[in-house]
Image 1: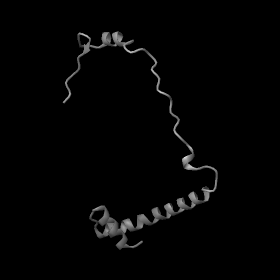
Image 2: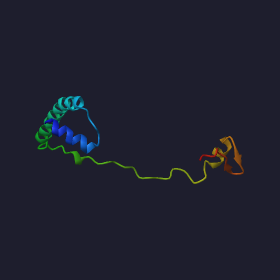
Image 3: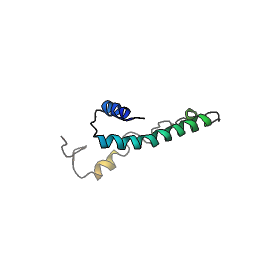
Image 4: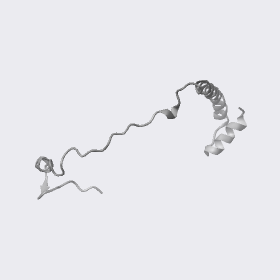
Length: 94
């Protein structure tokens, strides 16, 4: 990787870099790219195993109604600090 590559990345990211920052980033990007290359090799070597990323699926539960509609309404309305009739009074939120 060279300074011109860092300049191209900065242009794509729409950021301005000083010459010192370009040199610093050049030193910092190399180890990161080497690490990514190592990860790619590990992934390639493990791809022959039976474990695959897509093998796992979400386990979802079935939605069930566990109580009758309005069963707890009286209890909740009685506990609320302010009410008007059977309605609960709350602060106005804009």
